[in-house]
Length: 317
Ligand SMILES: NC(=O)c1ccc[n+]([C@@H]2O[C@H](COP(=O)([O-])OP(=O)(O)OC[C@H]3O[C@@H](n4cnc5c(N)ncnc54)[C@H](OP(=O)(O)O)[C@@H]3O)[C@@H](O)[C@H]2O)c1
Image: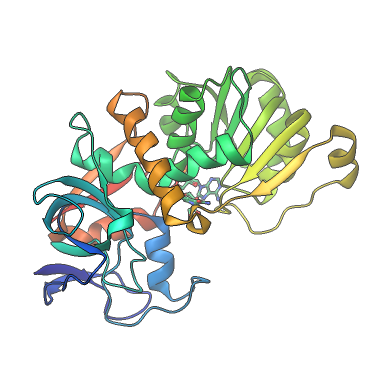
């Protein structure tokens, strides 16, 4: 089969011939029709991921969509979404993948392949972070810090789908923020995080929930924007690994600060969350900007992901 293969850690994959995966008991062989690239793929293939150093050569890709070729649990031809620990086993950026049966989710007919591939990691994490980690209740106000990427867009849409009252989308790119204006109030993060409070006041003021994938200086500025009993959930650190947080603020506001990684979810919970996310997407309640590339252009797609594309990237074998 043709597959995207990383031959040296830190280098982009290139397309080459590999042996077809062998299906083993408890796995399903799937012909991939669309696979998404996530920041975690670049992180794993750099060799710097806490899960460990992957072997080289390896096929990256932790999620994808395709049709069942051989399975003990699903009919041949069923359209499914699958996930695998790409990098550490053969991943989804290939013509075929062998995926654990427990991760194979049949797809609603109304959901296209690219969107079904794109919503997985970001949709599962956004849904669980908002509803279970931040305890989002209908009517709550939500600030999404870093709203212009794949995860941020999913957080904005799913906050709405879960019944949030006011949603504020914050990001540093005004053109990308504009595309979210139909679904959220917007807040431009300019180069001076200290301006944050004034801009937030204009965008609608304090909120019940902050969902943050930036951390760094923005976390220090955004924490005071929580209402009493507010919840702050961190999902990433694209703007910095460290943030100063005043203890008095936490005590007097009775604030809860948590972190969440979808990678820590057991497969059954991730699968259940994907089913919900897929239903939202099939109903048109979870939209993501998507840039789709042929598998042969994986090098270009990989570089686009590294540069923050403002969209989910999918590859079509
Ligand atoms: N915890 C979880 O379960 C989970 C799940 C999925 C992803 N993540 C993590 O969340 C982060 C975002 O993932 P993604 O898929 O949304 O990636 P993405 O599509 O590449 O988006 C990156 C986002 O970060 C913003 N950004 C990057 N550097 C920034 C900076 N210095 N200052 C302000 N904004 C900055 C980008 O803004 P621009 O649009 O302006 O470039 C964009 O909104 C990654 O670190 C990823 O590993 C975590």
